[in-house]
Image (spheres, rainbow, N blue to C red):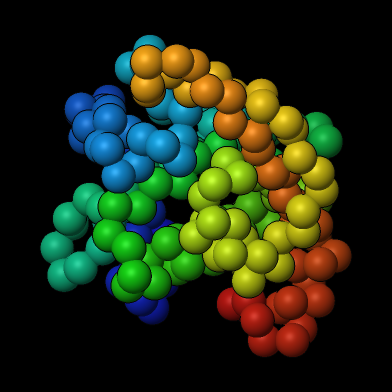
Length: 179
């Protein structure tokens, strides 16, 4: 289990947690910003060693407030993707604390050269967080994700962002990252 000074903890997801994960993905507040998976996809991510699937806990107890998925953890290219980060409680710095732990895990523990993600263009809040945490926009994938929430399908565009090992090291030297 990983914990930061803000009280955010990451613990490995167990199969018994998947009902919670699926409920979070179906939450109307989260759904516009993610592309939900089926249970079998989450089961695979929990079991397959190339993934790290975590429950995000916060507060005095073990209250689950979200989940995260890393992919490419065994990539010979040392390019790890933040596949999904969903934190239900907003405005308390939990997402930032979680992201900082994930960066530390990616670079220190998993020896990433590149830590990357994509974010839907309309997810302005998440994009601002990634910008402020050192991620650099690499490009846009135009209308690449089909969203079937309404009566007519809509295609969402994605912004691809990354943070490189050398950039992370500079941030650490500047005191912007935990040592």
